[in-house]
Image 1 (cartoon, rainbow, N blue to C red):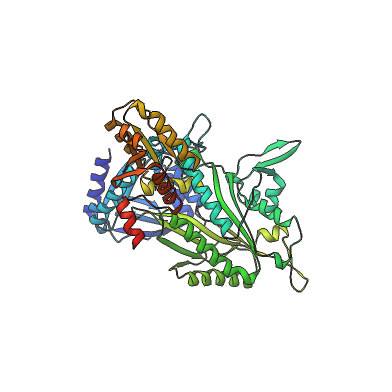
Image 2 (cartoon, helix red, strand yellow):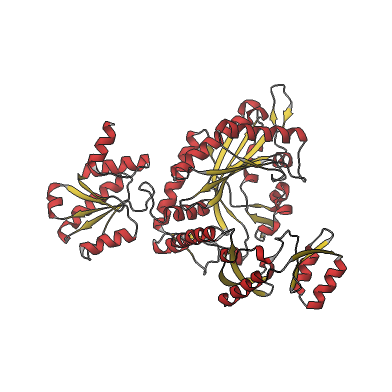
Length: 538
């Protein structure tokens, strides 16, 4: 009973118990844990590798292992800014082979207004949940009969995904990338060469045997691109090389961690790798940031939180290459004029990186884009180019993704627009609503013409009253609908209604399809004809 738990918490806060820190030996901590009979705390104690062991006590009522720090007393906690949310089962340490425990989810804030604001955001987030909208709008599903974390894209979701991918491909080709494709599996030796088998084995599926050799379904695309680079001798004149791939990868995730499209076992990375000279690195990063902004802004994301992560304690590569690469990343951010924070020591072991978080319609941030220098894979694969002086040198390798993965970005996009996709992305852009069976043939002729233009127009079956047809189109978030009666058929026109703007007026078929095509290509919404003419004049 969460109300009883919260009442007990409030009572403890009201007692204003002092919170004190105590240092004990490992042996003493073990003795105390055994005395109260809490075996899980023994496991936590074993996982603590530093000394001394610290214990925090709430008065003389309760104690626990903790690194701290804490407030001075329970009375410092704002009881009206703490809320208990839900109860759920949770496997100990996320391991489905271990004991099932009860977990209470809670949230705490500095003051009640902040809690109120958070609750409001969570209520809005619940309405936008991509799992609920995905089912309601028939976009995708997770079929448990096939296995958890594997996404089935339904026709409407596939239509949106195709538009996302087509735009991504065109933007990359226009920016000087070559599109490539790579296999879904490879000999296990490749993953040993890349280091993934040693460092990421827990995130990889088990191997399969093919003709007495072990093969691994791919968790990453980068080793394949390295093999392609190595396939021929490269000159400094060939660089930079930019290869982009929408590559589907598979990673093992525990069933308890899977979450809609946000955390899955099979997903498509919008992967790209750049191989360049050291002196080209900053310009290449600037271009990546320009392309990132171009692509994300198309989907309505124009507010970013940027972080530059620098060399960690454990890393590979010489000091100079780290310093030069970090300077290039920072220089690119300054050229771009973006504000950023520095995460000292937060880089990958193989190079510094830039992470871009996008901010959605209700203020949440999502990690999407990343740009990472890599000094490890070029060394492991022996990648080289012939310099102007005729010597063999190692190229700089840059990993970068803009969406992160198609699946996760799609989930974010659904929640950002609450299922109301912009016209250029909507799976059905226009639905024709026939008033009578006599206009069905006319409607299908219009839909056929639209399809030949690459537009997504469908005809309602017409077996409902007009008001119900309109309500159905609105529920399914169709951005445009056109009522078609005998009058419209005889005049060769369509009376268009926008889900967001209301009636837009009557259009000839050719004028409507032409305007719909223009708006799709420009990623614009349709407006009243009069408003359109005013915009053109201005």
